[in-house]
Amino acid sequence: MRTKIVAGNWKMNLDRDQSIQLVNAISAALQNHDLQGNRVMVFPPFVNISAAQQASNRDLRVEVGAQNMHQAASGAYTGEVSAQMLLSNEVTTVILGHSERREYFYESDALLKEKVDAAIAHGMEVVFCFGEKLEERNTGNHFKVVEDQLKKAIFHLHEGDWEKIILAYEPVWAIGTGMTASPEQAQEMHAFIRATIAQAYSREMAEGISILYGGSVKPGNAVEIFGKPDVDGGLIGGAALQAADFIAIIKAL
Image 1 (spheres, rainbow, N blue to C red):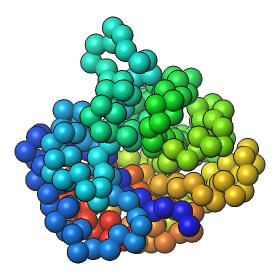
Image 2 (image 1 turned 30 degrees about the vertical axis):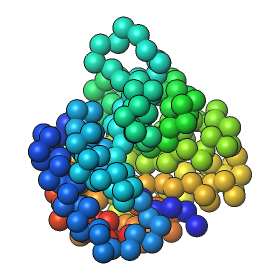
Image 3 (image 1 turned 90 degrees about the vertical axis):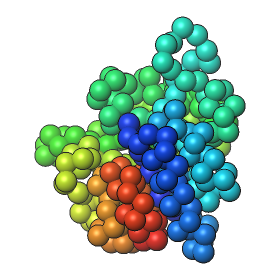
């Protein structure tokens, strides 16, 4: 059975004290909650990773990851962070390919391939993000866009490497816009993604890959979205910054 995951991407939000308060609230709410093998993750800005780890007591009920990393092992890359730096701070999971990194920082599929390779080479787990823009969906090109993003950045990996891959489908048009893909639209795309993986590798492998939905998941729609057979949880943005909302979404699994 695939692992179900709720992951909170905090983006550039919350200071140190707010980070501690949020993780404390999540941890307290989960103390007597049976996760049933599901995973809960939060991804703070780099400067608040340590504070979030301390607040979670590193008990693995609230896992703490990073929002990005550089593809090089070291060098003259001011402001960047390497895989080894993350590992030395007990961070083993990193988000790569988020639509905001693609759009605002011009991260291409070729660059993301390098980043994925660097993370995998260091034994890190990758939450790999991808998805179409509104105009691409409106023109009926959304399946091709998603297929191309996957093939160019991660389909070169060996089958064994996929044990370290979590996929996060994020329709760009549904991020921070108030728009949300219907549960049926989410299921349709997730099923397509799984079929595409099966064609490139094997059905058995595809059935074992966790595919998260990332597009304005809220307490009010989480149960219905997570109830779809190919949706294995969510990569949560705005709702992850509010303890009550994030906890409700976790319990929706």
